Length: 438
Image (cartoon, rainbow, N blue to C red; front, side, top):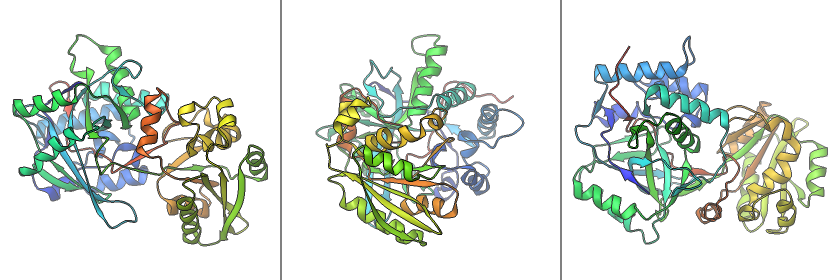
């Protein structure tokens, strides 16, 4: 991988308590209610750049004007010297009160096509979302949020090099809305930058979070390339070692607009899935606890929990099969061999796709027949309120499973992984040119 230092735009205030209120989780991690909360949190919250309120003019133009005015007013100031930014995140896993730590660094990463370059995709993207993000990048003339890239580091040497940043005081440490403490340093000495660049040069990697933004950046540059070192041919990214002990994947559950009925369960049974009733209750927390136990105990099998309404109560159904027993059926559906043994292939190819093919045709990242949720209880509460018809709960993938798919040159369905913690927006901005308000 080819990386480069850059002179980041950063918030001029240095108090962590101020930056706390300005940073945000990525645009796809919250809806309209979350956007309004961020608008009220601080007048300079980065949500005004990454996900502006719809108004009379296109949101891309609103973001461009906002960024330019913040630069003119000194809200954001460019660093005098380009550098690479070591980045530490301290966090608790949801439901676990044990502190963990993940190190990475923020830099410019040279854009390369997935087919021929060292950086690969591991999930499919939605074309509509890619187009919207590409327009935002083109009009704003900057990278506003971070892409999370996992790089090969078998011996952990690069990760240890980056962790050496802790020997000096950080620029700041700010806590995001998920409770993660995000600390940033800056390396601008040539020997530091060269050591990191040289160590990373032979490595490959894959996009963990930000497939749409990376694809949009690639599309933007390829459509507008003017010269070989066009600044837009680099994308701002946070790179984390695959050997990092703090690299975690959480589950991403599917929420359907319609409730599965007898016909769907019969079709799934005919496809080779065993279906057992776990529990029936009016209390979402009781159903969530039963689902959590079933998934934790079913790691050796294909295990999915389906929650839907049953009269005035909620019913949780355990959908299972012996690991590997469904491979012939999955391969006949066109599932690549590299992920024919994964639960997500069963969920999509044998359950959701046959049932919802027409509805999924116009699916986008944020709108459509499927929604995505990372919490057991929240997923089930949507069904309990009648907001959605069904919740499909699933175990998370392991890092080694994702690496296996990437190594085979294949990609998983959208939202197959949920890397945690998220890299936040607002720590740095990568502008391609001087920004002028108009």
